[in-house]
Amino acid sequence: MAEVKIMRTDCEILDTFSLMNQLRPHLLIDEYVEKIKQLQNKYDYTLAAVIENGEVKCVIGYRMMESLAWNKCFYVDDLITDPNSRSSGYAKLLFDWLEREAVLAGCQQIHLDSGVHRFDAHRFYLNRKMNITCHHFQRNL
Image (cartoon, rainbow, N blue to C red; front, top):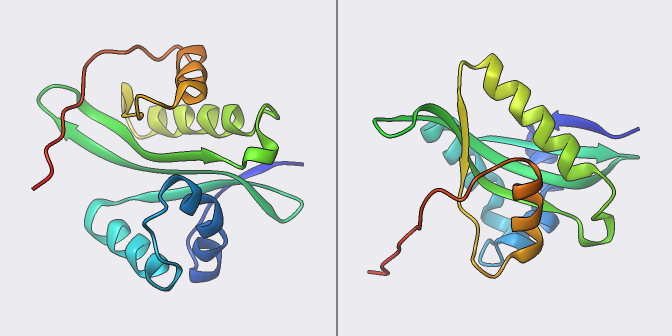
């Protein structure tokens, strides 16, 4: 049976690399655990995964933040499901878990950005009753 687990140990974090690397191909395996730990220490980043039969099926990275615009909320930095496991309910399981965690933490909203080309992801977010509320702008320096 699939379960959601917060990935804390170096070994657990490393188990998420191959999946996270599909979403973030610039990541290097030799630096991954240290990078996650830096995000955890500096931004209270949480890495969680759906595990079934010892395999990572879906991974989410998020943090609690507070702003004048959104008050206290969860911001999802990373969310990916194993391509061979899509449409199996893993992302729904993880997102339902995230919503419960957000409520328990006193948050009233969940926010995320998604690349304009990720149509399947957008369909999932819209099915989770998320709204498209803004445009995200970027400038490389």
